[in-house]
Length: 81
Length: 307
Ligand SMILES: [Zn+2]
Image (tube, rainbow over all chains, first blue to last red; front, side, top):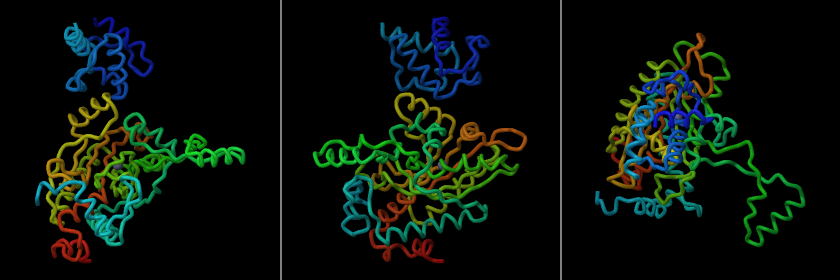
């Protein structure tokens, strides 16, 4: 799951984060993720995994690391299944 | 006051009946009477006198600003739904005839217009940042400006407190994080005291901007989590949902990064602004003290007209 997310985010032109240098727990905001790019992350994840983030999950914390993103996505895909 | 009649409609109807505001045919665009303008002028004078010890530099920008500046500010990322871009006819005689023909036929003639380099100013401080950046490095003790401008937001509404064209007076501090936060703190106190001196009920609360879409929900959550925006709220058209009449905004280094606002040593400047919604404060005064300004409480009259 994390590798799929990593590969997906690497392809996004709006996200100027160097994924070679970050671990699953690196803070993506410290690595240069902007709030506007976070929106692009959210939209890309929703399309890739056929999920929809509820408003309560639209927080900085949800997108602050690859591990957190994977956690959120797996909760939402389980819900959808 | 009776909660049933404390709504947008009753206030707007009263202001029309008393010829304080005048209809124009568009919700959110109103003519203002001399009395209404006098209240606004007096309130602006009060704001300026309270801010006077800080020795701000005053700049008045027009209600239209550079489209390139708005584009560069990132406004369209956050508030595309509120922006207004000025369009004009730039065709020749043939297109002119076409335009008149379409108009006469009741067709949509506006497609014959093109975007100009002018957009309507969405907040008084937007034209300021590139102006300051163009002057070179910001001095070590920062800079402070006092601005006033008509602003536009495309949100047609019958709530008189939500006009499409309204005036905003602002103080904008550009400096270090400590300098701009101290500035915001001082206005949180001074702003509340000022509104209380006008005998208006108010409370200060954490707030967020109306960012566009679901992504905007996330930006709004972040803004709240980080305590970047506070508003001073006064009941104007609803008791349960009081109106934001003053706002206290900390931008961190957003505009510093966007416009390259830096100190001489190259470090990025932070910024904060305090905005006074002039029509909203005037509406709050008319709502709470009545349509006849001569009948307002003596202390309020003295605060506004006393000097
Ligand atoms: Zn501002």
